[in-house]
Image (cartoon, rainbow, N blue to C red; front, side, top):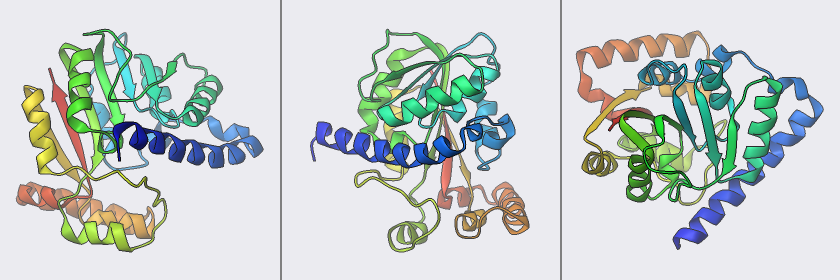
Amino acid sequence: MGAMDRLSAEQLFHDSQAENRLRDFSRQPGRLCFADDEYLDHESWIRPAFNQLGDLPGRKLLDFGCGHGMAAVVLARKGAQVTAFDISAGYLGEAQRRALANQVDVDFLQANGERLPFADNCFERVWGNAVLHHLDLEIAARELLRVLRPGGVAVFCEPWGENPLLSWARKRLSYPGKHRTADETPLRRDHLRILGSIFPHVAWQGFQLLAMTQRLFGPGKLSAGLSWCDKELFARIPALERYCRYILITLRR
């Protein structure tokens, strides 16, 4: 599939997802309002990822593939000057409604991550959640480097594909929230090497080994206990992070 066909398919898929969500919000518009903790605690890697962004007041920040806009709202409430883009017009509509409902200022526009409509060196921080694995990573990373200022930091949370058992489960099992486009692929070590060939500083951290069962059983005491076990395991055997469900990537220019 060509690049334009791939991106068009991504756009149609996410527009459809947004349309389904719009029905719910039309019935219950109050659900657009939320507290920061609701977003920061919905997955175990979100708070550590936000910590990697450092101080945000007054920083020019790009929400790279903003989706439903919850991150953009939280980042704006933390004082960042947020610009947010997405390929999906449907998701942008939801994100704009969410920003308005939560009374924050965010500049939204439609774009794709492989061709950013921004000047060179214009952002001090970049945030992205589950977006790089939809893109041609080398093209997107070079665009990202172009718009990031020297000394800037980009933080991404991405699905990870080095666990063969998890790869089998992703293909064969049904579980809540399993929605994917045909061409998306979890990142692997080869993708980290691509990022390392473009950015001078690349660091990553794994999340959810035992705790990945949360996808099947939902949050609760079991998931919390398994998350604690993961932290202990990683402290003793860091190589186990390779088999995690998700990774946090920090890029510095």
